[in-house]
Image (cartoon, rainbow, N blue to C red; front, side, top):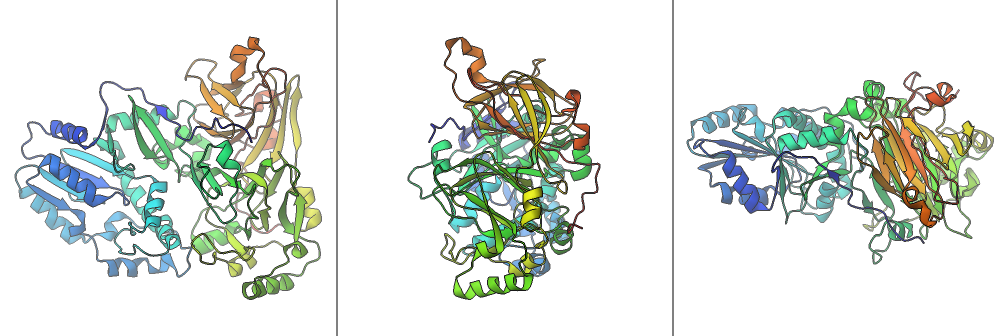
Length: 635
């Protein structure tokens, strides 16, 4: 396999005005003491996202601020039993799926007790420290407001460790899937809503994702950093996770720990899960990337996408590595009306598999759609029996389609599917990413030694059996359409299906070309070649280097112009160029019917092959905001 140049810790270099960040408790404490000089009766409020090691952070701050009194939000929250009763219907009994909730943080507090604490805080003299999740409820106008945020992936790791329970619960040893469910459907929604009310006036952002090395930056610098991010290309910090079917490809290509048994997933394009790493004069502060979506939605997404999706980032990129591993679970995603009625989500998980790589000399394939002539009742009976016998003949019921590098398979919701072993899949999909109904998992146990969840009842209500062999071959396999072709340039539409709001494009280049975002966000992935450079023809941002298999975001606001060239163009006189350079782009634009002329390309990244070869393979996508996006079964 190739040598890795994949950057696992991409940072956004933040332009600053003076000292704006501190590292370590001593420096953080000194800065907070400085902020309250001349205020002997100052109130320091430290509001927290759940997942922060609250006792450790409170101890560190108390030691350095020496407050006259500490007020904790735990003194005013509802008891566990009352909270569990309130959430019962939204949590359900399922291990994985709940119902999306719209609670506000005040509903988790005894507001009469909050009022009492507010009075006590006002009467106490000396420095007062107000601390915990929702601390800002206890002091409306503190002298210093600190927000201790927490990355979503770090929360998940702390759940798995058994050292973190859900908020207002003591379920430390509970199944991590159930903890995640409560976070996804309840807690993270509540806490994100609360955090957004504080964004404009926090004085400091506190990062304790690395518990041993806390970091802090000013609120002004933080808000400015988010504004800077949407004026230039940027990446989010990826993470990698093992699985029962995981493979070996990412170990080499992404430079991961070779001693680990496998890596199954990589999330490098999911703002709800990933983080932004903000480099503030050499101090790297980690913040959830979803904050950027919430606070700079229009500038990031573009007006039309924002009008359709609000403060949600509706597309995702992730990797599924089965090279040297096993088949994914046989699965289906819910239809739009089903996910709305059953789970309270606005839109569903349409997706596609782009085959980034495949094992050589292997029988690589995907399972996609129902075989012509199968009977739903017989199919359901075979799946039900498999739960007892551990046997299921998938090839009897599901199409097995050969897969090779750079193939693209479209998977509108309701289509049964999975990747076979020895494929490296770049999965391009809509964001509701946990709504996978597993039908058959090849008789495996999860890494926790427990059977993986099967959702046959949900699945059977969503499988579209008329998507049979002929229909799949015609509609879902390598639907490549040439949009434009010229000297050294070819643009192809490769998907997604017309029912899906995402569109993908593949571009072939051997020269530099400039493009516009088309007023829509673009997410790009370099699918061939070693490096490329995204540049602004007008010098509006510094040249941005993207490496093989990396995702990069280009914001949609303002119709920005940008271009992409192979890195080697800058020193091609050396003649050391080999291979090809390509990219995958996901953006949201208008109907494909408008994209048949050069000026209507919309948001495209341009790539140039290394010297001696033609640039190869890049996808783009769009959101068709001019069509009715609610869709169920095909006619």
